[in-house]
Image (tube, rainbow, N blue to C red; front, side, top):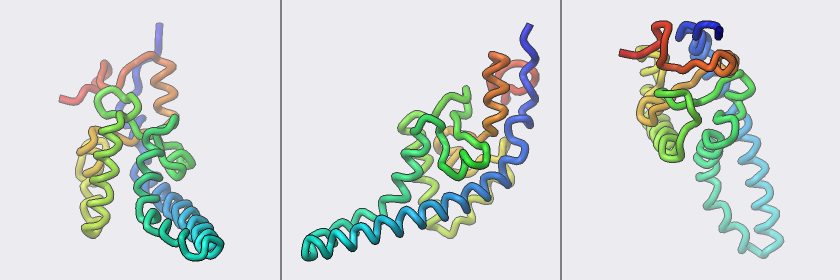
Length: 166
């Protein structure tokens, strides 16, 4: 007999604060990545007598690709989220995000940040503390330890034990 599927709070307890810290870690990682890329492009630009400076145009796309490729990676989380024990999953069945879900989520995230970031506060009022970009992409951020426990019980996110959303 398999143990019962844990209550929904087991998946989302502590996620809000961990997401905030993960965002700070990701900002630091992105800052370092952009700094190294900038210096590399500068050296390349000097070595190519100015031709390499055209690569600077790619720098604004680095954060977008950082987030998109992280969601599509094996662990489905940014490095900051992985460091803090979080993973991004589909809300309906906790599977890994599909390409279009990840793309939509990242696009809405950057639109939200570009419009002051206040829309991130939606997470304070939604079920499972989902942000606007989570809702748009049909995604949810959960604890990795909860995912491991769920895998061990062969259960499902929206099954049994009162965890099904109405």
